[in-house]
Image 1 (cartoon, rainbow over the protein chains, first blue to last red):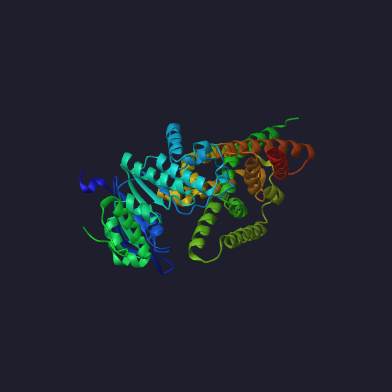
Image 2: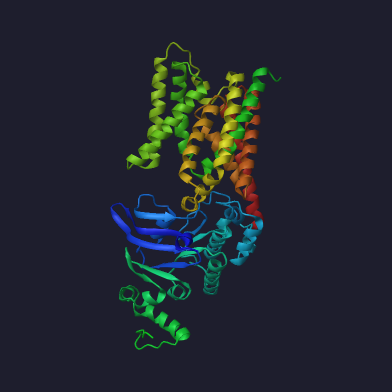
Length: 248
Length: 267
């Protein structure tokens, strides 16, 4: 497979300005089939904005977006659904595409909310709704999956299971995933490429590269590199003093 | 008992109810009731245009309402005024212009009450033809844009992100609103058209747990309202529009009883 064929979406120096204020600028990244790209950064650093640029929700952007697929699944960070609509989980699953019942059941089972299929969407808890959102996005069997803090409000054990599920989906469907996450541990273990944002790209690369970057340490503090230390220690037997990472 | 005019009114009314049912659901879901009011108030201007230039009333109303809708969209883009202020501005100024123009048209005898509140005596075979063909076109187009329109009603960004083109669906829906007002003006009258859109849909919301059910109940509610309203209009010699809307109100109140019962059952 050539590089061009596996590219799903590519941002070239992209940025978005609202009311004369840059929400994010100068972002270049590529999401390829079967790869997980993660955006990290503090609040207001432009993570969700970057995702929306990639999805084509924002129209008047700087730079360019090349999108090579229309099969997209999206889990937004914030979703305001008007409860004047009588909407069951089942109706919500069919929102943007007519999917077969088996595919709906499969997705709901994978995210552990099959028992809620005929419940009214307005009566779900935050964590349950989040699982339904993920189920809806994956049931379409998309080529590109954009997940904006997909496990917010989900209990701790569920969180781990859902991240494992996301990794599995990326492997089995061979889809590309653009993930926004606060959980640095997950980011560092399950991601192919990390982009660290702070209004612009402050650093990017493999989880290792980013964790060693000084700007990253300034943004997230020494603790953030500790996470990686633990991880490295467990898997690569690299030891460190005072939180610093020794290269092999 | 069933005079010829009454059969015509029944057929026309059934046609109107079949269209306002599904459209009314979207008016409720998308919170467009004031938008509906604005378009129907501007319809008076459309009616005066029809008399002035000897045009078909439905066509003239459709054109004027569409123009008002376009002006509204432009004003929304170019001013910082809130949406409801713009709607009020357009509703009342177009109503005022319409009434002033009527004042000038002294050579034509106007049945203002019939225009405002509907007049079943005035329904002609030609009106029935317009209602049923226009209504069929509206329903077919609505069916075609259903997916993107519904998805963007639930969440605009999901619809946009997953490639459904919600802006186009919204623009088409605006035109459908103008069209439904154009075909229902003779039956319901321009002051009460929004009621015909909202009340059966609101009634349906009270007794539905899925969007499909709400559309079906809204259509049934609209049909019952038309039948009850027209029979009482004939019986008590009242205007057709208010009679139909009152029938819809009664159904709405009955649907509230249903809610109370289900709350009791839950407790």
